[in-house]
Image (cartoon, rainbow, N blue to C red; front, side):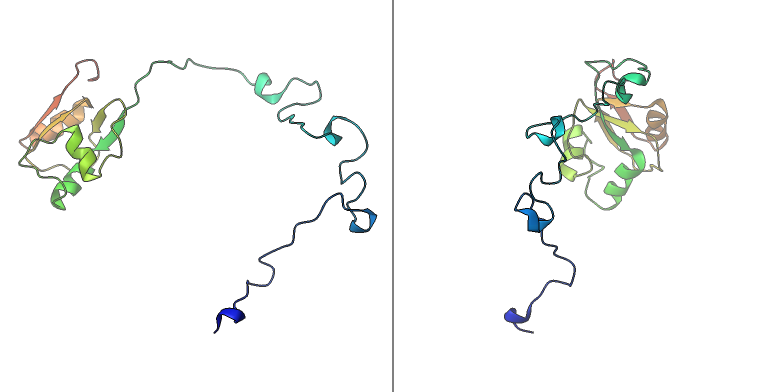
Length: 157
């Protein structure tokens, strides 16, 4: 095979239909936009407009309340922490803080803090300090002989 023999697969590259280029093109004169009206003009964006009928997004019921100052936590399961300890990405002998979890690559970013949940098996004797944790996660870490401390009292539920 030579460089001059390289070709795209047949049918992979389709030539664009050139619009508004004379009557012989099949898309000349009005360029497929019909005659007159708002949609025939340029600069029209009427997404969600239903011709005066009440739009779908307004017909549907609005429910609940979105708290404007809610906290978003990065969630970590105990099973994943155990896996990273087994793979020697996290040292269980040292304190496991939020910064350690981010450095190891287990959590991408801290957000408003890291919350530990109890999914998975945990057997390492480790000291973990995070912003939030479920009661079952705290129990699982203490059962393994470690300790899980929650740094802010408000985050622990």
